[in-house]
Length: 87
Image (cartoon, rainbow, N blue to C red; front, top):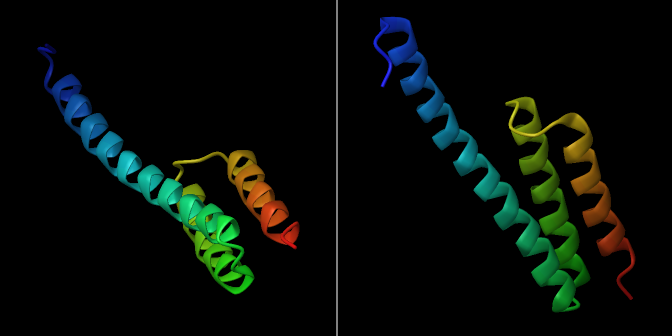
């Protein structure tokens, strides 16, 4: 355990940031699962709607620094490709 006051604070701040990041990442994963669930159900309209919501969620995570710009672009690209390849 840290003895210096600033180090103790950094531990607390890091823990709260980790909790926040975990919640945001969980939300992104849920949004992605909704897109793939709509694709599996062959519901193109629901897939497109879920894609828009997932893209917004991923962009918000990127703006908060949870994901790197390229990571979020890759995730959005893969989702878009999957939706566009639906029959």
